[in-house]
Image (tube, rainbow, N blue to C red; front, side):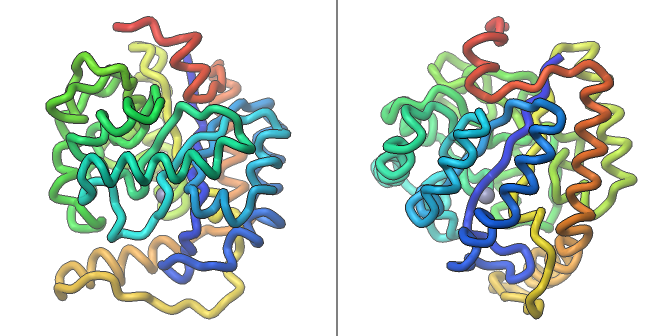
Length: 303
Ligand SMILES: [Zn+2]
Protein backbone atom coordinates (compact mmCIF):
# COMPACT_ATOMS: atom_id res chain seq x y z
CA UNK A 1 0.00 0.00 0.00
CA UNK A 2 1.50 3.26 -1.17
CA UNK A 3 0.85 6.81 -0.05
CA UNK A 4 1.98 9.76 -2.13
CA UNK A 5 2.14 12.89 -0.02
CA UNK A 6 2.28 15.73 -2.57
CA UNK A 7 2.83 19.44 -2.00
CA UNK A 8 2.20 22.30 -4.43
CA UNK A 9 4.50 25.29 -3.98
CA UNK A 10 3.17 28.47 -5.53
CA UNK A 11 2.58 32.21 -5.02
CA UNK A 12 -1.13 31.84 -4.29
CA UNK A 13 -2.07 33.37 -0.95
CA UNK A 14 -5.09 31.69 0.66
CA UNK A 15 -6.19 34.73 2.71
CA UNK A 16 -5.71 37.16 -0.19
CA UNK A 17 -7.11 34.74 -2.81
CA UNK A 18 -4.53 35.94 -5.31
CA UNK A 19 -0.83 35.77 -6.10
CA UNK A 20 1.26 37.39 -3.37
CA UNK A 21 4.80 38.48 -4.31
CA UNK A 22 5.82 38.29 -0.63
CA UNK A 23 4.73 34.69 -0.17
CA UNK A 24 7.97 32.87 -1.12
CA UNK A 25 9.82 34.51 1.77
CA UNK A 26 7.10 33.47 4.26
CA UNK A 27 7.00 29.96 2.85
CA UNK A 28 10.77 29.63 3.07
CA UNK A 29 10.99 31.01 6.61
CA UNK A 30 7.81 29.58 8.16
CA UNK A 31 5.54 27.30 6.10
CA UNK A 32 8.15 25.03 4.58
CA UNK A 33 10.17 24.34 7.77
CA UNK A 34 6.96 23.48 9.66
CA UNK A 35 5.79 21.12 6.93
CA UNK A 36 9.22 19.50 6.51
CA UNK A 37 9.32 18.86 10.27
CA UNK A 38 6.06 16.90 10.16
CA UNK A 39 7.28 14.89 7.15
CA UNK A 40 10.60 14.12 8.88
CA UNK A 41 8.78 13.07 12.04
CA UNK A 42 7.15 10.20 10.12
CA UNK A 43 10.12 9.55 7.85
CA UNK A 44 8.10 10.47 4.76
CA UNK A 45 9.45 10.68 1.23
CA UNK A 46 7.25 13.05 -0.78
CA UNK A 47 7.00 15.21 -3.90
CA UNK A 48 7.05 19.03 -3.99
CA UNK A 49 5.68 20.51 -7.22
CA UNK A 50 7.21 24.00 -7.65
CA UNK A 51 6.02 26.65 -10.07
CA UNK A 52 8.88 28.09 -12.12
CA UNK A 53 8.08 31.56 -10.79
CA UNK A 54 8.41 30.41 -7.19
CA UNK A 55 11.61 28.51 -7.95
CA UNK A 56 13.08 31.59 -9.59
CA UNK A 57 12.26 33.84 -6.66
CA UNK A 58 13.18 31.36 -3.93
CA UNK A 59 15.82 28.87 -5.06
CA UNK A 60 16.66 28.39 -1.36
CA UNK A 61 13.23 26.78 -0.88
CA UNK A 62 14.15 24.13 -3.45
CA UNK A 63 17.53 23.61 -1.74
CA UNK A 64 15.75 23.10 1.57
CA UNK A 65 13.32 20.55 0.11
CA UNK A 66 16.14 18.75 -1.68
CA UNK A 67 18.28 18.64 1.48
CA UNK A 68 15.38 16.86 3.21
CA UNK A 69 15.47 14.16 0.53
CA UNK A 70 12.15 14.92 -1.19
CA UNK A 71 11.50 14.85 -4.92
CA UNK A 72 11.12 18.16 -6.75
CA UNK A 73 8.57 18.31 -9.56
CA UNK A 74 7.03 21.02 -11.71
CA UNK A 75 3.77 22.93 -11.13
CA UNK A 76 3.96 24.92 -14.37
CA UNK A 77 5.73 28.23 -14.65
CA UNK A 78 2.96 30.68 -13.90
CA UNK A 79 -0.02 29.89 -11.65
CA UNK A 80 -2.30 32.69 -12.85
CA UNK A 81 -5.73 31.61 -14.18
CA UNK A 82 -5.10 33.22 -17.58
CA UNK A 83 -2.07 30.98 -18.11
CA UNK A 84 -3.89 27.74 -17.16
CA UNK A 85 -2.75 24.79 -19.29
CA UNK A 86 -6.29 24.01 -20.46
CA UNK A 87 -6.48 27.34 -22.32
CA UNK A 88 -2.97 27.13 -23.81
CA UNK A 89 -2.18 25.40 -27.10
CA UNK A 90 0.53 22.77 -27.49
CA UNK A 91 3.34 25.21 -28.34
CA UNK A 92 2.43 27.49 -25.44
CA UNK A 93 2.36 24.56 -22.99
CA UNK A 94 5.78 23.37 -24.21
CA UNK A 95 7.11 26.91 -23.80
CA UNK A 96 5.71 27.11 -20.25
CA UNK A 97 7.25 23.74 -19.31
CA UNK A 98 10.64 24.60 -20.79
CA UNK A 99 10.66 27.91 -18.96
CA UNK A 100 9.87 26.18 -15.66
CA UNK A 101 12.49 23.49 -16.23
CA UNK A 102 15.16 26.08 -17.01
CA UNK A 103 14.83 27.57 -13.51
CA UNK A 104 14.08 24.40 -11.53
CA UNK A 105 16.62 21.95 -12.98
CA UNK A 106 19.85 23.87 -12.28
CA UNK A 107 19.08 23.27 -8.59
CA UNK A 108 16.86 20.19 -8.51
CA UNK A 109 18.55 18.17 -11.25
CA UNK A 110 16.46 16.47 -13.94
CA UNK A 111 12.76 16.59 -13.07
CA UNK A 112 10.14 14.17 -14.42
CA UNK A 113 6.98 14.79 -12.36
CA UNK A 114 4.30 17.32 -13.22
CA UNK A 115 1.08 18.70 -11.74
CA UNK A 116 -0.81 21.43 -13.60
CA UNK A 117 -1.65 24.72 -11.88
CA UNK A 118 -5.27 24.47 -10.62
CA UNK A 119 -5.27 20.90 -12.08
CA UNK A 120 -6.28 22.35 -15.46
CA UNK A 121 -5.04 20.32 -18.44
CA UNK A 122 -6.29 19.58 -21.97
CA UNK A 123 -5.71 17.01 -24.72
CA UNK A 124 -2.41 18.65 -25.72
CA UNK A 125 -0.86 18.41 -22.26
CA UNK A 126 0.27 14.80 -22.69
CA UNK A 127 2.21 15.73 -25.85
CA UNK A 128 3.73 18.79 -24.18
CA UNK A 129 4.88 16.62 -21.25
CA UNK A 130 6.41 13.97 -23.53
CA UNK A 131 8.15 16.64 -25.57
CA UNK A 132 9.79 18.14 -22.46
CA UNK A 133 10.91 14.92 -20.76
CA UNK A 134 8.25 14.40 -18.10
CA UNK A 135 7.07 10.89 -17.23
CA UNK A 136 4.30 11.38 -14.64
CA UNK A 137 1.34 13.71 -14.24
CA UNK A 138 -0.89 14.16 -11.21
CA UNK A 139 -3.57 16.60 -12.32
CA UNK A 140 -6.62 14.35 -12.61
CA UNK A 141 -8.83 13.96 -9.55
CA UNK A 142 -10.86 10.89 -10.51
CA UNK A 143 -14.45 11.00 -9.21
CA UNK A 144 -14.04 14.42 -7.67
CA UNK A 145 -17.10 16.61 -8.10
CA UNK A 146 -16.76 20.32 -7.36
CA UNK A 147 -20.13 21.60 -8.55
CA UNK A 148 -19.97 25.35 -9.03
CA UNK A 149 -17.28 25.79 -6.39
CA UNK A 150 -14.28 25.94 -8.67
CA UNK A 151 -13.00 27.55 -11.85
CA UNK A 152 -13.05 25.48 -15.01
CA UNK A 153 -15.55 23.17 -13.28
CA UNK A 154 -17.44 22.28 -16.47
CA UNK A 155 -14.30 20.72 -17.95
CA UNK A 156 -13.60 18.99 -14.66
CA UNK A 157 -16.88 17.05 -14.93
CA UNK A 158 -14.82 14.64 -17.03
CA UNK A 159 -13.05 13.66 -13.82
CA UNK A 160 -16.14 11.64 -12.92
CA UNK A 161 -15.29 9.01 -15.55
CA UNK A 162 -11.48 8.95 -15.17
CA UNK A 163 -9.86 5.69 -13.95
CA UNK A 164 -9.15 5.56 -10.24
CA UNK A 165 -5.88 3.65 -10.42
CA UNK A 166 -2.77 5.06 -12.14
CA UNK A 167 -2.84 4.75 -15.95
CA UNK A 168 -0.90 5.70 -19.02
CA UNK A 169 -2.69 8.70 -20.51
CA UNK A 170 -4.45 8.39 -23.86
CA UNK A 171 -3.55 10.82 -26.65
CA UNK A 172 -7.31 11.37 -27.10
CA UNK A 173 -8.08 12.49 -23.54
CA UNK A 174 -6.15 12.87 -20.29
CA UNK A 175 -9.06 11.20 -18.49
CA UNK A 176 -8.65 7.96 -20.45
CA UNK A 177 -6.25 5.05 -20.39
CA UNK A 178 -4.00 4.91 -23.47
CA UNK A 179 -0.56 4.38 -24.89
CA UNK A 180 1.39 7.55 -24.10
CA UNK A 181 4.56 7.47 -22.02
CA UNK A 182 3.00 9.64 -19.33
CA UNK A 183 1.75 7.87 -16.20
CA UNK A 184 -1.23 9.64 -14.64
CA UNK A 185 -1.27 9.23 -10.85
CA UNK A 186 -4.75 10.48 -9.92
CA UNK A 187 -5.30 12.65 -6.86
CA UNK A 188 -7.48 10.75 -4.40
CA UNK A 189 -11.14 11.74 -4.31
CA UNK A 190 -14.59 10.29 -3.76
CA UNK A 191 -16.89 13.18 -4.71
CA UNK A 192 -14.88 15.23 -2.19
CA UNK A 193 -11.17 15.63 -2.89
CA UNK A 194 -8.69 14.14 -0.41
CA UNK A 195 -6.68 17.32 -0.04
CA UNK A 196 -5.56 19.82 2.59
CA UNK A 197 -8.38 22.21 1.78
CA UNK A 198 -11.09 19.60 2.50
CA UNK A 199 -9.22 18.50 5.61
CA UNK A 200 -9.28 22.06 6.94
CA UNK A 201 -12.86 22.90 5.90
CA UNK A 202 -14.31 19.69 7.29
CA UNK A 203 -12.16 17.40 9.42
CA UNK A 204 -15.25 15.17 9.78
CA UNK A 205 -15.77 14.66 6.04
CA UNK A 206 -12.05 14.01 5.73
CA UNK A 207 -12.12 11.30 8.43
CA UNK A 208 -14.79 9.51 6.38
CA UNK A 209 -12.81 9.99 3.17
CA UNK A 210 -9.66 8.74 4.87
CA UNK A 211 -11.39 5.59 6.02
CA UNK A 212 -12.63 4.90 2.49
CA UNK A 213 -9.25 5.66 0.86
CA UNK A 214 -7.36 3.41 3.30
CA UNK A 215 -9.82 0.57 2.72
CA UNK A 216 -9.71 0.97 -1.07
CA UNK A 217 -5.89 1.03 -1.08
CA UNK A 218 -5.83 -2.16 0.94
CA UNK A 219 -8.33 -3.94 -1.35
CA UNK A 220 -7.27 -2.67 -4.79
CA UNK A 221 -3.66 -1.48 -4.38
CA UNK A 222 -4.67 1.96 -5.58
CA UNK A 223 -2.07 4.37 -4.18
CA UNK A 224 -3.36 7.28 -2.12
CA UNK A 225 -2.42 10.73 -3.42
CA UNK A 226 -2.95 13.51 -0.90
CA UNK A 227 -2.52 17.11 -2.02
CA UNK A 228 -1.26 19.77 0.36
CA UNK A 229 0.33 23.25 0.17
CA UNK A 230 3.02 24.71 2.45
CA UNK A 231 1.00 27.95 2.42
CA UNK A 232 -1.65 26.09 4.47
CA UNK A 233 0.89 26.07 7.32
CA UNK A 234 0.83 29.88 7.52
CA UNK A 235 -1.43 31.59 10.05
CA UNK A 236 -3.58 34.48 8.88
CA UNK A 237 -1.96 37.65 10.12
CA UNK A 238 -3.10 40.09 7.51
CA UNK A 239 -6.48 41.66 6.88
CA UNK A 240 -8.60 39.38 4.75
CA UNK A 241 -10.00 40.83 1.56
CA UNK A 242 -11.96 38.85 -1.00
CA UNK A 243 -10.55 39.30 -4.47
CA UNK A 244 -13.25 38.99 -7.08
CA UNK A 245 -12.21 36.76 -9.98
CA UNK A 246 -15.55 35.68 -11.38
CA UNK A 247 -17.45 37.77 -13.90
CA UNK A 248 -20.97 36.36 -13.41
CA UNK A 249 -22.93 36.80 -10.15
CA UNK A 250 -23.54 33.07 -9.70
CA UNK A 251 -19.87 32.23 -10.14
CA UNK A 252 -18.95 35.13 -7.86
CA UNK A 253 -21.10 33.86 -5.00
CA UNK A 254 -19.89 30.25 -5.20
CA UNK A 255 -16.40 30.38 -6.66
CA UNK A 256 -15.26 33.52 -4.85
CA UNK A 257 -17.33 34.39 -1.79
CA UNK A 258 -18.41 31.12 -0.17
CA UNK A 259 -15.41 29.13 -1.28
CA UNK A 260 -13.03 31.80 -0.11
CA UNK A 261 -14.54 32.06 3.39
CA UNK A 262 -14.43 28.29 3.79
CA UNK A 263 -10.85 28.09 2.63
CA UNK A 264 -9.70 30.25 5.52
CA UNK A 265 -10.61 27.62 8.13
CA UNK A 266 -7.96 25.82 10.16
CA UNK A 267 -4.88 27.44 8.67
CA UNK A 268 -1.47 27.48 10.39
CA UNK A 269 -1.01 25.32 13.48
CA UNK A 270 -4.53 23.86 13.23
CA UNK A 271 -3.71 22.63 9.75
CA UNK A 272 -0.43 21.10 10.90
CA UNK A 273 -2.20 19.25 13.71
CA UNK A 274 -4.76 17.78 11.30
CA UNK A 275 -2.02 16.77 8.86
CA UNK A 276 0.07 15.22 11.62
CA UNK A 277 -2.87 13.11 12.76
CA UNK A 278 -3.71 11.93 9.23
CA UNK A 279 -0.10 10.95 8.47
CA UNK A 280 0.22 9.15 11.81
CA UNK A 281 -2.92 7.14 10.98
CA UNK A 282 -1.57 6.27 7.52
CA UNK A 283 1.72 5.14 9.00
CA UNK A 284 -0.08 3.00 11.58
CA UNK A 285 -2.28 1.47 8.85
CA UNK A 286 0.89 0.25 7.13
CA UNK A 287 1.31 2.62 4.18
CA UNK A 288 4.68 3.15 2.60
CA UNK A 289 5.30 6.80 1.68
CA UNK A 290 6.84 7.30 -1.77
CA UNK A 291 7.42 10.17 -4.20
CA UNK A 292 5.77 10.22 -7.64
CA UNK A 293 9.09 9.33 -9.24
CA UNK A 294 9.70 6.42 -6.85
CA UNK A 295 6.18 5.16 -7.44
CA UNK A 296 6.61 5.07 -11.22
CA UNK A 297 10.11 3.62 -11.26
CA UNK A 298 9.87 1.12 -8.40
CA UNK A 299 6.29 0.15 -7.67
CA UNK A 300 4.00 0.60 -10.64
CA UNK A 301 3.46 -2.79 -12.18
CA UNK A 302 1.88 -1.56 -15.39
CA UNK A 303 -1.71 -2.81 -15.09
ZN1 LIG B 1 -1.46 25.09 -7.40
